[in-house]
Length: 412
Image (cartoon, one colour):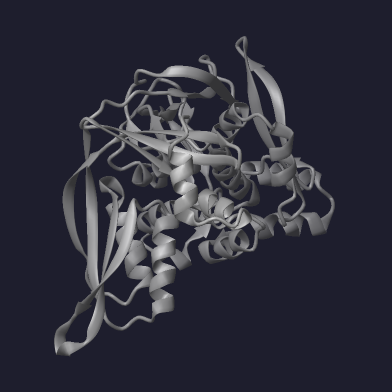
């Protein structure tokens, strides 16, 4: 199984995660060209090769109006004092204080795939929920100081773009080193970890160290929480690549985040627990239901389906079922509440048996076909990608079943 293991022994920050993932891809210049072409205010993402304590890695630098890495009140004050251009000062402050609705509008307007946009907005939603809880304010009343500025948006978008390029089947993270001491932010001097980060990392293993400073930022915490499926020490993994994302600060211990790309083995006859969320609906249009199903699937639901049912007062309706990972049931319940008319959702935990899956590309005289093999329980199954078969059938004036039978007889 294609696996990413994120080593958070020196915490986690958005730019470090992005830099480590950047080292794992092949077409680095293509990625930089793509992210720098986004329709955002004047900025440029640079990937710089650096060395910390003898280890070479990458630092991601975001230049906004030729000012590097604007992320703290104190940094903005220094930069603005040196900048005599009033228009640039106004521009920086405009993007320094913002709210979740403006962030949503900004991300939605970008020339990115729907999947990347959704991942980006979901990560920001995790941050917004934490800030809302800490400050006891609705999400639309929260003002993002360190998190809402343009370089943080770019970090999260870049991470989501890189995840889409790498396409890992599983992401595991280590317990997270938070550091210690105090940090200065827009609300004053706060203990490490700051309240927002602490809220985000609820139910995730963390620990303090004798390193004085904030090692895990709210952005880094939200990214790890969203993508990582498990939090444990390094599993048995056959390493293929290692990415080193270097931080901007220097400590006695080398300040970098490592991400290992490799293969892990899963045992046959595996079973796992999933959550099943259900609700009855009789007052939604087919268009709205279809939109909700697509949204849930795009956000990582394992399966979503509807069944026609007869409800009270003899009204026809639908039973909506969403199957998701157990630890993400609250997230999907919120999506269902936001995008349907239901007032209640039933939740049940189910044990699911799964075959061990292996993905590959099958070369045929008609072209490449994406495929997967499932093994386990004395069973072996081959599944070919529907879209690829449909394309071949259409181009060759063949039936779908005819193409399927021809391809199934071919060996990998």
